Every structure is written in C-alpha cells, then in structure tokens.
Length: 203
Length: 263
Image 1 (cartoon, rainbow over the protein chains, first blue to last red):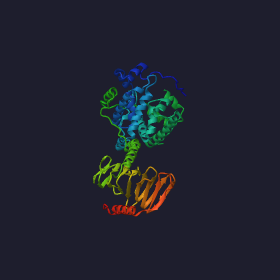
Image 2: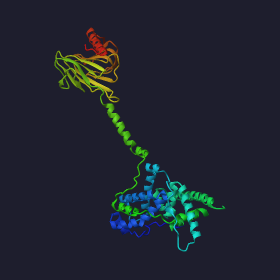
Image 3: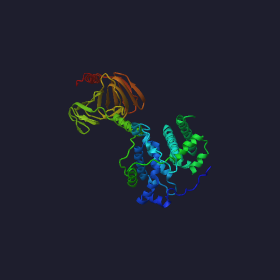
C-alpha cells in the first residue's frame, strides 16, 4: 500500500507555489497557466459525469467562473487538484439538484464524447475494434450507475486522485471514500459483466 | 500512481479490473470549438458568458426562505392582530366637552384619549358596535384604544372624576374591559354598568352582565341591579340596590344600545 505523504505534495501540472500565489492574486498570466493545466481534466470529468457534451461545456465554463470567485480560498502550499475538483463537483451537483436538470431529464444522451480513436499506428484493426467495443461497454455500464457512483469512480480511477483528495472534494471520511469506491466498482463490474456477457458469442 | 496503488488493495474481479482499466485509460473527450476560449475568458474575468445557470428548485427555494417567510408572516399577523378594530365615535355631546384635547362634536372619531366634560356638559360615544358609553358632567375619563383582533384583548379605562355609564346591550363584551379608579379596579365582562367617582370613593353600578371589583378588601363579584360603594377611607365596601335614578339611566343606555337609538 502506498503511504500518502503528510507534507505538501510536489507541485503538479507545473504549478509551483509562486505561481499559485499569483493565481490567488488573480494575475492574468498565472491564471492562464492554471487554466491550461486544468481545463482538459475538468472538461473530461464533467463530460463523463453528465454524458452530454454541450451541457458539459457549459458547466465546465460555470465551474471556472466559480473558481475565479473562490480563488481567495486557494492554498498555494497544497496541491490545487482537490480544490479544483471540489468546485467542479459542487457545480455538477447543483445542476443535478436544479429544475433545469429535471426538465432536461437525466442521462439525456449517450454522447460520442467518449469515442475511442485509433490508439496507435501499430495497433491492429481487430485490437482497435475490441478496444472500441470494450470502451463503449464500460461507457454504457458507467451510465447505468448512480451519479454518486459515477462521481467517485471518475475521481479515483479517471482523475487518479488519492483517497485523501477525494475525501476533501466530497466532504466524506476516508473510510467512506474507500467503501463507496469499492461498492461503485462492484456495481460497475456487474453492469459491465451484463453488457459484456450479452455481447459475447459464448460466456 | 498512488491512486492505482490504493486500488490494488481492493478485491476486484478480472472484469472489474478490466472495466477500471478502460475507465482510467479512455481518451479524453475533446471540447467543442470555442468552448476552451469561453471558459478561459470566464475564468480570467469571473464573468459568465452564455452559461447554464442552475435554477434552484421550488423546493430548495422554499426550504431556504421558508423560515424567513414564516417569521415575516407571524410578525405580520401579530401586528395585524394588535391593530385596533374599532375607534371611539362621538354619538352626541352638549356643552363644553373635549376628547383628546379636541372638541368632541357628533360624528368625530377618536382612537383614544382623555374626555373632559364641563358643568352641564355630557358626551355619548360608541366603540364600534360593541360598547356605548355616556359620560356625565364634570367628569374626566381616559378612554383606551379599541381591542386588537387577536391581541390586546384587555383594555382599561380610567375614571378620575365624575361618572361614566356603559352598555354593550344584550351581548357580553367581546373583550375584557378594566375600570381603574383610585380606590378600586374592576373587570367588566358586560353588559350594562356605571362607574362613579364620588366624595366617598368609587361606586360601581351593574344593571346586566358581570363585574368583578378588586379593592383593598378583596375581590367582589357584583350582583346584577346592585351597586358597590368602595370607600376611600378604608371602610368595608357596601352592596346596595340601584337607586331609581341610576336604574333609569342604565336602562335608557341599555335600550339605546339595543335599539341603536340615542337617549
């Protein structure tokens, strides 16, 4: 088991303490670097949570607006990832709670945002097809899970955030993170197994 | 990665591991044209562009403002409940009569105030349709505001000098009326009574209804068609029958209230 460090982690995404201080002071150049470091991750996370590309773009933008407003709370001595994903997760949760979400309906569309492009020049067509099918099955399995399950799976497995970071983002204990993550994996596995088994010629 | 190291501790089946692998390695979806620039501008300025604004549900709005709305409603109701529902209206008067420092002419309305009648002067007034009073010459009576709708249901009037007769007709008073004199106080529940300050002290006469008198000697429930003389010198209060004059005046007032005709 990897022991999580007690002190501040090493700077991520090329954002050192000095840069984070300038971000907190809303210095444009530093903010641009911060944005470039996190936009793709935030956008991908939101897209996979919502499974709607257009809505994901709007909520990603909304999340960055909120981050601007919350910059005073950015701690330059810590990895900003938990802070970023806390803001983003709360933005998505507010949307889920909103009337607009209920008007639009849940899980509106299976967007092609998760299309698997050809992986590499060295891949074979068969391998690419298998990967494509598996990825589509995982995508569909993920879509069958509750928002809470999707949330924790994407934070831990997709964003590769540590338990302590997810604990901070979701506002739950470390034990609760592990428990929820474990259950979410099981449920993902069940859903994936059903889809995968259904698509297989033989079991 | 530390995340995947932690994941190794979990008891995952091969299928689950495979699902997690695809979850962790799937390529990131590409944002649409302009999405990155819009988000960047919003981050730099803090100003939203064309964004989806979560609209709080009615339930959450209700939950958020319900306590405030409830407090405001209660305060409003309480305030409304204390507002006097009736005012004193002068039915008729004669001679030198002042109500709250102003001439008490017929038809005039007053919220409250001191009524002063000179020699040979008198005033008759009504409190809505609840109570009719008659203040005789050489009197000084303080009339209170009318009772509120729910609160302020007890009102006290003060008889400093002279005499005041009152009647609510055949109906009991819908509120508690207190009478305050120097030697006695009384709770009037209706219907027709008189309070007189005289040289001996205070005399309370009752034609109909119920009056409880409080004095140094204790509490006395006044029987109908009787008067109670409370003495200033400390003598024991005396119960007496109403004399003919008192009876006539009270009956006339009672008749006026029940028939809505002035005496």
